[in-house]
Length: 439
Image (tube, rainbow, N blue to C red):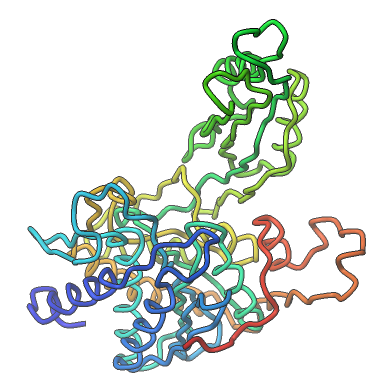
């Protein structure tokens, strides 16, 4: 890259982040359309192409695409740079969501922090690595769709990478340039009470389902998950996030539902957590639905080469060698479950993500790109100094579609291919078409 003081470099960072923010890409959350993810993917492809990096767009769902780029290295083993193309909604924003306004060195707009700033840093890093001759390891840059909803972009990426040997992954999210080696998982499910509806003038003839739910709510408020805290993540949590009940102001409600958000820690099995909660809450007279969201926690050992290389790169740029944990989930847990050592890293603060005045510090985006370049070079150096060879890294097993799989008894989780385990834990159905070009 050019000198940190170069105005051209500063302008290039600003223009790249602003161009990304100016393309709306709100996740449609199951509604028709792509919300703009494909337009962002095409822009990433075209920008990288102009900077010497070949990229392709791959259709994941009808009209919704990932973009995948490759910088060939001296070794075919891969360091993955992964971030997402989609954003949350723009309702309630106090700045224009897609203008990309710059004030005081910060660029404002939806996605500036989560995660178009981190994506821009990865794009700048890939361009620099392509410009400087073959890097020690092959670099794959992926911008994926649907991170904010059902993770289908990253699960499709696992199929794309099935024949690659990935020795480390950096996942672009706003971490304040502090690597996150751990984050919580989540299990979400619905709890239901059933009564008997009736006229509100004769409540004695009805059974009020909301009143039946009241002691359940009190129980949840008074109890905590019985699991030891994690050193980076703190305690597991269980929260009521939505309550629904009643049909009219003069009718005793015959049903009441509430949604539970249970944040899990590394070492907890998400489905076992749900089973324990189900038994606990059904004993209080409720029905508990199967989970509608299941996502594992992340816990990458701090001495993993990609983590130590990133910490050394930070130190070389005058930053602390600290690591952290995060209470929210990312694509990193799906990559790690598929056998790819993963760390979350990027410019921006999570306090600005999804915010009414979302923004990112442009200088931090530029610094993040420099750190990523140094981390990739250091990762290659460390692995090769330890007699590493790409043949020493077992390739991930390609998940195959068995025509009789729908009727067969599922195998134990430990017997499943890594990509299959990652897909199962997110309850997402990946369509058979992949590497299909988007328009």
